[in-house]
Amino acid sequence: MGSFAALGGRGQIHVVSGEGVETRAASARRARARRVGLVGLMLCAVGCPSDDVSVDSFAEPACPSATLRLGQIYPEEAAVVVSEVCFSRDLRPDAEGRVSCAVLVTTSASEAGCSCEGPGQSVPSPALLAEANAASMRAPEEICVCALEPFTDAALTACRNEFDDEALTASQGWCYLDRASVPPLGDPELTQHCGFADDRALRFVVDVEADGATLLALCEVPAACADG
Image 1 (cartoon, one colour):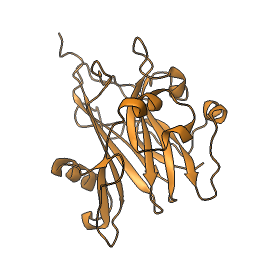
Image 2 (cartoon, one colour):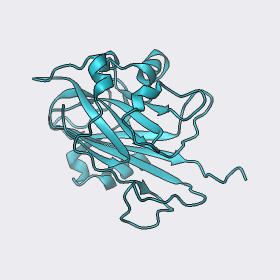
Image 3 (tube, helix red, strand yellow):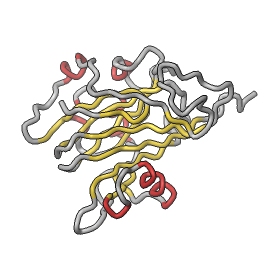
């Protein structure tokens, strides 16, 4: 299992394939509950009471309206990685379970330049590219930033319900899970490792390059008091 750091929210990561890495069966997937190198921090565009507040002590404002920033740092080894980041905020999905999130994966730029033509990838907008560049500790010319597309159709169903990580690695992508909704969005057992109040999660499948990668998810958080 590779180690990682969560830049926002709470989560865990498991390497599915790669040199010297054993695959994980469904039974092992259910059993894993330990956290590996986890550092949690909730970052808000607006509404945070201070600049240094852990997710354990964070008091949500009465009427939050912000961008939820979640992230992960992946291990420096070529592998397909399945991971989740848990959080408490309800992103209020539409009737099909879609939420307003943009997911960006940053890798090292190659001599051939930056290409976002792989499965599940697309070229990010200039605004999203600026967000990724601002979050990176490297110069823009040293990195390649691609948008990770949400899963659809059969791949989306698998992302929300499949315990066997190997069944998810045909393509890259992500999905939203919410065990608190009625009915639950996705199998609730997929988020059993999340904290008591962290009922939601984003689940990612990323093909990581040999020198690692970072992931940044920017999700619109609807205003809690917009309806009243």
